[in-house]
Amino acid sequence: MTAPYTLGSLPTVSRSTVDRQEMLRTNTERLVAKWPSARVVLLDDTGRTPVVEGTTSLATRKAANYGTEPPADAVFLGEWEDTDYWSLPGRAEGDADTVRMAGSWGFVEEVPRVDGEIWVELRGHGDLLDDTWAGLFTTAQALRNWRRQAKFCTRDGSPTELIQFGWASRCEANGHEEYPRTDPAVICLVHDYEGVNGSRVLLARHPMWPADRYSVLAGFVEAGESLEGCVEREILEEVGTKVSDVRYLGSQPWPFPRSIMLGFTARADPSVPLVLADGEIEEAVWVTREEVRAAFRNSQLRNEGAVPTPIAGGAAEIILPGNSSIARVMLKAWADAEE
Image (cartoon, rainbow, N blue to C red):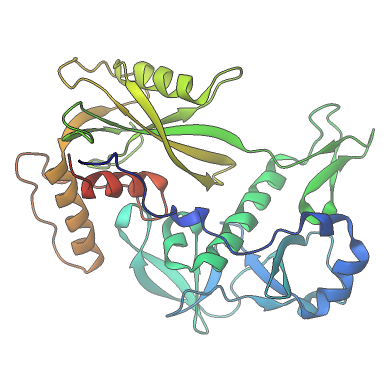
């Protein structure tokens, strides 16, 4: 008997091997003592970090290069194999050329290269890193984005300073402490009632996306709302369709700027006319499993520099989310499943 499909593997930026060592965030003596042997992950103003070209590893720096103890803006990421890891602002130094590689939505992008290092961003290139480096990059990005939005106290409006080596802030006026926030959002793959896993999936396109880009439906959880309730509400609001059999699949941090994507699957009736939310959904279509499989084959062709082939019976081209997105993992799992 066919089993309900599952993700099969962790989404790209859910992977991590690093021990976050929460108790060390208030242990200044211990962190300062190991600073000289620690390693630093650099992030530039656009969120890029250097990667050793041709490898799956971040190009970290010696912490000792930045002083005898952690600078005020240093953020402690955790410990791995007896080495502490931190994050600091940085940028590419020297004359940069460019290298072409697959980026967001599977398209080839040009990224800067200096002295054998390429500066990449998490959204398009997180899947190219191994578990350790993907986890470090994701945590560094999340804390960087939180700090950019937490420079003033939400209770009294006064400026804040970082404490606990980047894991909390304290306001200058009254000493209120605040911690990094994560906004929960649901993302749901909706398929039809054919068999166990359906034969068609519902894809949609946001008005801001270029032509042919499609993904599954998603939205933020509202105050006082359950995750399952959010799935039902968001899909009804965005495409006018009621869903049933809501089932959890997995999750992925998505620090753009501070979300966690909670993946679900559900069923709906393709014969019900779609009613698109004005300003939110530009287009929504039911697509067969073979059309999705063809879209994945075309993605591989683009990565290889070849010309994609038209998808028989469907759009001229369906461009799926990039490799770092849980949406792609969900669609691949569904495409590989049996009805």
